[in-house]
Length: 318
Image 1 (spheres, rainbow, N blue to C red):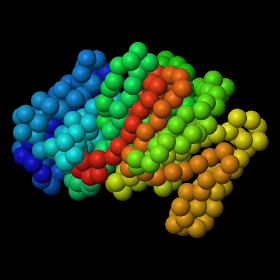
Image 2 (image 1 turned 90 degrees about the vertical axis):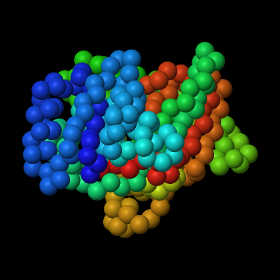
Image 3 (image 1 turned 180 degrees about the horizontal axis):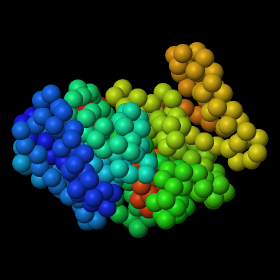
């Protein structure tokens, strides 16, 4: 391990004393503990990118994102933005969704165990997604992501989730908002272009572009998605009546759930009339009207168009 480790932590998620105690316990038992440690707190103005920048400037070879999905995303974005890792990434999940941690089997709810993984694990490649989008007010933004982006039920569910309930019930609060999200989304027409091919017209209520496929509660929405395969996986949901929703449930639970499990997971994800699975390295979407948009579990407002690309092995994660 590099002689210096940096810990970028979100003070709103855990008391500093508690986090330091978990780290020191893990460090004391590590076979090759780092010689020095830097602590870099995030803020509302800087969810992690600036803190990661300071850690890099101090010579940290491993930088740990200790916080929720927003902290992990901000740190990962800075470490992988050049297309090659600026330092190795560690994760101590302290949020509600903890989406990347779930996909990488990082221990949840146990900071000491997560630090153990950082201090003893071997780094593996991880792709970084990049999304550029036009906002409803005519602005443009570019952000990195590690799990998924998209519009539809997922973004609506995040927007509908009660913050107080989320603080008390954790990820189960998303279930409570799912019904409102489903009734609040409607099928719309839009165009989609994959890998530079001519745009095609599509009608759907939800589109997800993913680097990882597992959501809260361990539910795998995109079974082919792998965080290190250099590709993006797309899920298009078109159900607009009871029959369509029944078809969607059957596709997810049977076609890409139990049947896939029985086959040993070797078959590709199956599509159906209401559910389509696609793969690409570059995606371009244009919408006829603004739609709520989410990046790694955070709603970022409404967008009218967006493009997504993948930076293969831009990160190395413990």
